[in-house]
Image 1: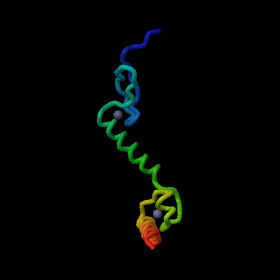
Image 2 (image 1 turned 45 degrees about the vertical axis):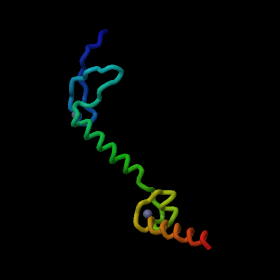
Image 3 (image 1 turned 135 degrees about the horizontal axis):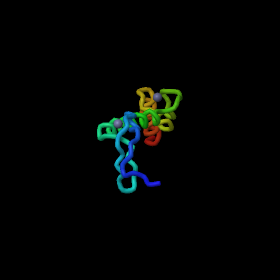
Image 4 (image 1 turned 180 degrees about the vertical axis):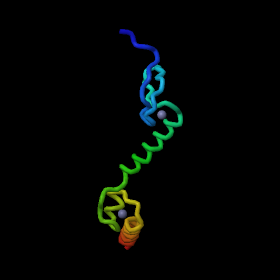
Length: 91
Ligand SMILES: [Zn+2]
Ligand SMILES: [Zn+2]
């Protein structure tokens, strides 16, 4: 059984069948540069979503440091904490 050089397969992004051109060492999964860009952007947003902080109590230093929460209350708590710590070390 011989495999043809070109094959068609659905694009992982838009689902449209496209003719697969076998490159050296890697399989093409996406039909066009536009689809690749779309996919990359989506992956980026998905990645951002994943790294969003897990549920925690906002307005705490833990929220800011451990969960890397970037909300105003958490940031403020951290600022306050840093200020207190600085004040303590100065005395
Ligand atoms: Zn596509
Ligand atoms: Zn927060």
